[in-house]
Image (cartoon, rainbow, N blue to C red; front, side, top):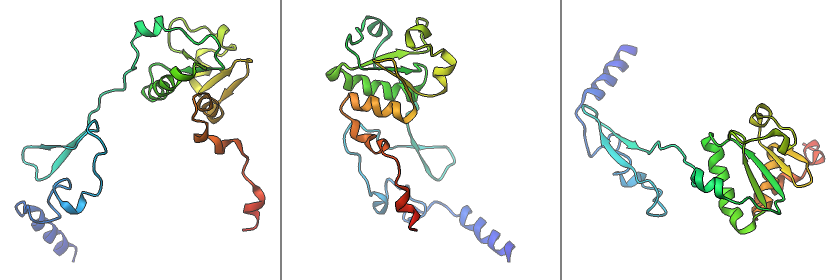
Length: 185
């Protein structure tokens, strides 16, 4: 029985490409699979690439690393807000961190309440940042309030987002779960 299944499978694989078959047509040319369209022209369109000897298409996606939207010279010349309410400690070499920092930095231009500190830079000083050394700051996200209180993890993100008008994103994290609701069931 298993030999019969293997023989049928091998014969189906060895058949030439049938463009009318929904099993072998690429999804971006098949009208059944076009469920979502790109919302704007700047999105990455699927690029068909035909590999030699292959019967299917491969969708190419740019693997360009996330770059800082602000050059080093601009960053050095950038004046940090004098009346900042929260200081964000971030790793400038982390692409994920830089996406978050760039988004917050862009929103902060209207508010001017966040001071950004790259813990990976040569001029990082633990003394200026509540004694948080490089190893400690790299362990998790840290933010320092203007009164000197250090907050970490989700609390840090919630406080940062509140300062740029996005407090609703993390608002649910302010509340403790209600045990009484779950005890009934």
